[in-house]
Each structure stands twice: as C-alpha cells, then as structure tokens.
Image (tube, rainbow over all chains, first blue to last red; front, top):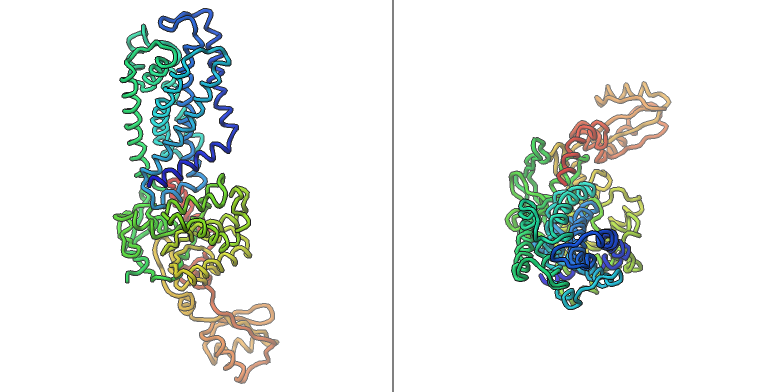
Amino acid sequence: MIEVVYALWRRDMVKFLRDRRSLITSLVRPFLWLVAFGFGLRASVKLPGAGDDFVSFLVPGMAAMTVLFSSMFAAISIVWEREFGFLKELLVAPIPRGAIVAAKLAAGSATATVEAGLMLALAPLVGARFSVVGALVSLPLLAIFGMSVNALGIVVAARMKSFEGFGSVVNFIIQPIFFLSGALYPIDGLPRALRAVVLMNPMSYVVDAVRGLCIGPHHFPIALDVAVALAAALAFGALARRTFNKMEV
Amino acid sequence: MNPAIEVEDLAKKYGEVEAVRGIAFSVGAGEIFGFLGPNGAGKTTTIKILCTLLQPTSGRARLAGLDVVTSPGDVRRRIGVIFQDPALDDRLTAEENLMLHAVAYRVPRGERAARIAEALRFVDLQERGRDLTRTFSGGMKRRLEIARGLIHRPDILFLDEPTTGLDPQTRARTWEVLRALRRDFGTTLFLTTHYMDEAENCDRIAVIDHGKIVALDTPAALKQRVGKDLVTARSDDPEALARLLSEKYAITSSATDGGLSFLVEEGDAFIVKLLTADRPKLGGISVRRPTLDDVFLSLTGRQIREEGAEGQFARLRAIARRRG
C-alpha cells in the first residue's frame, strides 16, 4: 500500500522534474506581484502592522499564492489522465482509491512546496528581508495547505471532461481564495463584512502563520493557524477521496 | 471449478438509453471468447462492467466466482485490461510504465525486473524499454499495453478492440502474441471486435446487436447456421444451367458476369454431384464458405459496418462517451 503510494507519487515527481519549463514559469507570477505591486505601492502605502517594508510584507502571501496556484493546477493531471486514458489503468488496478488520492495530494503538494521554497530562496534578490529559519519552518505548513488545495482541485477535476472546463472553474475558485486571504493586506482594520469572509478562508490562516514566522506580525495564534490548515486538508482530502470512490470511466 | 466469467441477465441503462439489455453468457477458463458487433452495440459497456469500471443497472456478473459489484478489489487483482484507446502514461518510459503496473499489482519485488524484461521480449520491444512512450507508434503502444497486461499474469485478460487502427502486419503479430499468451500461461481472453476476420480467432463468439446477444457459438457453428455455401459457376450457356438447377435441384440462381451463382448446402459435395450429372458445359466452378460477415447479415439483416447502423448508434455512443 505504502509502496504503491510512493510509486504513484514518484511518477508525478519524475514528470515534474522532467518538465523544467513549468517550474520556471511558476516563479514568474509571485515575482511579478512582488516587483509590480510591492514596489509600485511601497512609496504610497503604509499599512498598519506591516511596517515600512511592503515588499517583505508581501513575501509570505506570495509563497502561499505560489502553493495555491501550483497545487490547484496540479490537479489538471486528473483531466489529462482521463483524456489520455491512463486514469482507466489506475482505476482498474487493485489499488485502493484512497491510495491514488493520497499519492496525488502528496505529489501536488510537494511540487508546489518546492516552487514556493524556490520563490522564497530567490525573494532576497528583489530586496525582501525575512527570517530564513521562519521560512524553513513555514514549508511544512505550506505543504499541508498544498494538500488541501490539491484536494479541492481533484474534486473539480474529477467532474471535468475538458481542460478548458477545468481552467475556467478553477479560476473562478482561485481568485476569491487569493484576494480574500490577507495575502496582499493585513487583516486588522478590515470592514466587517470583508473581515468575515476573510476569516472563513483557510488560506488567511496559512498566510498569517507564514507571515508571523517570517517577518513577525501576525493576527491569530500560530497554533490556530496550523489547526485550521490541518482541518482544511483533512476535510478536502476526505471529499477528494469520496469523489474518487464514486468515479466511473 | 468456477467458469472464468459468468454473466446473468446483465443490463445497463444510460438515462433512457439501454446500452446493454439483459445479456447472459459464460466463458470457460482458458477460452478465447469474442464479442462481435457493430460500434455502439454494447460491447465496451459490457467490458467496463466486467472490469469493475461501471456499475450495472441490473443483473449479475462474476469473474472466477467473484461478484464484480460486491468484490471489485478481488476481481481487479485477477484481471488485466487492454483498453480500446491507449492507457499508457506517455511521459514515462516503457519500463517505467511496466514498473508502475508491477507495483500496483503487487508483483513480488524480486521478480519485477525479470518480468518486465520478459514481457518486453514477448512483444518484441526489448530495445525500446528506456524510451518515452510518447515516441512510440500506435502498434508499439498496443504491444506495450499487451506486455503490461502480462506483467501480473492475470487469469483473465480483457481486450477492447485490440487491433482497431493497426496495420494488417501488426494485427497479425498481435494475434500471435495473444495465442502464445493462452498457450504459455493458460490465460482466458475476452475480447470485443467489429472485425469479422478477428472474430475467427476466437473459440466462441457472442454476436451482439442493440445490446442483446443474438447468437453465441463457435465461428464454425455460426457459419454452419447460415448453412449454405456460395457456388459460382462459369458457363457458355448460363440459361440452360439455371434451368437445370431449378428443375432438378430446386435452386434459385442469379446471373453474374459470364455465369451464375447460387447458395447451396454442402457446396463441395454439390459440385461433385453437378459435375457427374448431365449438364451444360462448364468453364469453371468455385465454392466459398460463408464468412462471419454472412452470419452477421443473416442474423441482423444488416452488414456489420453499414452506414445506417452507424447513424442509428451515434446518439448512444455520444452518451456513452459523455459518461466516460
């Protein structure tokens, strides 16, 4: 069982490593945000709790965003494998569906975390300053977040028959998660309605914890952040497994 | 010992459309059993139910005594499936594809490398093990899938249209491999096809049309059922010959270029009778056994690849595809 999960996980990792281009392009988005948004607003905006350094303030949010986009789009492999037939080979094999889902989550989250780690390693090049130890400690939390996002992606992908369909639904989901997460602004002092939505978004807690670990200021207790991230991963993971159990080809 | 496959009153509905309408058959261990029918007749739906990929609407199917609905895990361990469309991971190498399969089917660790090498040799791909499968031709992919089907030594191997889209040479080679598989491993083969000549390779054939089995027998017996052979005779005086046939033997013949043709039971024996009778001069005579094409025509009144049939089933197939 563990061996099968490992073999399936390894399969996705091998393909990830063979495809260098997607690794590089995944870094473009966070750096575009850091440079354009970070430097663009640095002079004119002073955020309460953000200090003077808006670029560094954005880094944790960008790390979480990298994981959000990468893990979500990693789930497109399900659509891909359905289109090119490999999914049938998986579903007809004597592997528990839960093992297939576990391998997918592990791979989707691992590739996203590698990308986020790389993004964090390169962020000092544009002048961001943060705790290296804090960033390293953040990586497991980002990996847990990656699993919950990937699970959500699988739930969508399992119902999609086309790449276009997956892309449009996922974009519809991903934008509010990103913009209503506190990745771009502190949660303190938000209008009540907006704050209520942000509090319901698991990504807010992930960003909060990573920000606390990397640059100091944070809103919730870190233990609460971790608990929410774990609960989201378990809930979405269970949902993904249920979806897979019912899947027919 | 249980039969390899037992199906009772199996039906599958997609909404209002009945893809499979209550079929029953059983397949013995080591048998090569074929499902013959036009596209959309219900062949792929049946195979998917037997492989645990689809739930039947009603009825039962058991593989080696195991119910496909209640014990899918046990069924999956015993079967191999070669799908109509390639189901390889084309961004992995041939060996990586086979290794993943070996792990998934719990082939003992120590035997994996040897089985992979053996399987690749079996389908003549030993030189290409380290190549990405996306570089393979259609025939090579199909052969690699057959190799994959061998890795875990399944009791029953399902093949959905195993040689569709392959060139004649590759088709012949594929059949060599399949026959060797039965000979060397005693594997039961269940296949679907809409090629008549391919169906001839089976021990028994179920002819399926509109989701129902319309005939089930050996290819020879099915052809026997059509009964008559087609005799074509050349003659300088076809009218006289036609008269003789109708008066003496009560056979209706039809005119062809330079002669006539007619259907008769045991054509070879009839030729001898005709030659020794008082008859007009013959320029030549030939007899052809009925083919499975003739069988299908006589059972359904349609050619298997008639355009009309295609159109009629297009809707059903579109639905089947939407369902995956």
